[in-house]
Amino acid sequence: MEISFRNKGVMSFRPQFLGIIVFTILSFPVGIFVSAQNTTDFMSWKDAQNAEAVPEWARIMLSRDFRDLTGTAREELLAKTLSSLAEIASDSKVVPAVRYNAILAAGQLETSPGSPRTLPTAYPPALTYLVDVYYQANTPYYIRYGALLGIVRHAILGIDSDQRYSVIDLLLKTAASEFEAGQVVPLEPAVWNWFRQTALDGLSALKATGTDGEVVEELLSIINDKSQELEEWSHSHQDILNREAWQQIRLALELASKSAKTLGDLHYPSAAGVNTTNMTDTFIRLTKAVCDVQCKMATDSIDRVETSPDSSALREQIVVNVKACTQSVVWGMKSGFLTAARPGENSFYASLKSDDPAIERLDVLMTEIVELSTFFDEGVKERRSGALPGVPKAFKFDLSELRDALKNCSEALLNIRERNIDSSPLQ
Image (cartoon, rainbow, N blue to C red; front, top):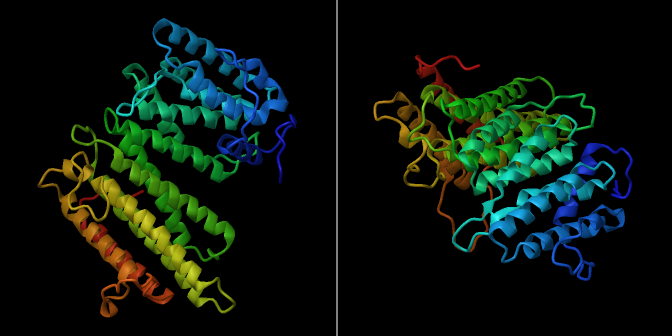
């Protein structure tokens, strides 16, 4: 469906939203008219005929209007520019693409531009504005997403202490909020997952575990919720090789993996209130749930009497899904890649006391992940051989062998969970 941004009528959120995103990344041809005056004429942004030119105008405005401007003069222009952008973003008569680019530009405003060795300093009043817009009940979702991108940019560049906790709360609520059907504006689960993953980017940048470990606990809750979804799919009697099931499983995998990766981006040396047993259980549970649901996919494909999907394509997708998850789990544990010799100094693993039982269980989990990863690279143990130089890499196992490897890993992880007698029950 082709979307025209000159149409001011009501349209479904997804095509509108995706079309707006496209406008922000397109490269427009040279020759678009831009006013030569010292500051931007924002009135021209409101003309629907200029909608395609606005992204380039915004880029020029951010680089030209503030070039070599400092002190009071810069602060005055920043305040004036933010006011103009806010007025455009809130005007329902303006083309949606222009409103979206206005909110994006607001998130790009800088008190100082930085240098090759230093990050820019984001404009604090813009953050206050973006948070207010995000919380307004009548804000269109595409404007909310533009505000969220700006908030995450502020998180990356640095946030004043008086705004830090309110931003953490906003990001945490967004990441933890499940999709609600029946929205007034049509919104698909995949789009809301997009919001949640973007919020996780902000939490990764802030690196805070929370005053009493609440950030960690909320992220663990997200992972456990998604692990439960995957467990239900793995025990389901319905066909999970259809498109709808694949989509739901993929969304659960993506969010759980991103949440695990986010846990690895936080700083733990001075963290308070982190339940090490719960965190260890959650990493084990997610890894097992992913192995189980991907094992079921392989099994269902093998057992089908009728024509099954291309086994090579399915095998590749299963490997990609499991690798993405296990790499995220390793990062969550050690704040480093699977091949890293040592855990990161600020990692969860490094923060554990030497007598913490979680260390032994995490080591066993790591061993199983390494073994599974080795299988993906080298195939069944009995047939492994060194890679020949110049020979393209290819899978050294078939779908049934992949199923067996996932099953073996799942059984080993089940043993880890059963041995942890003192562990609190997983939800």
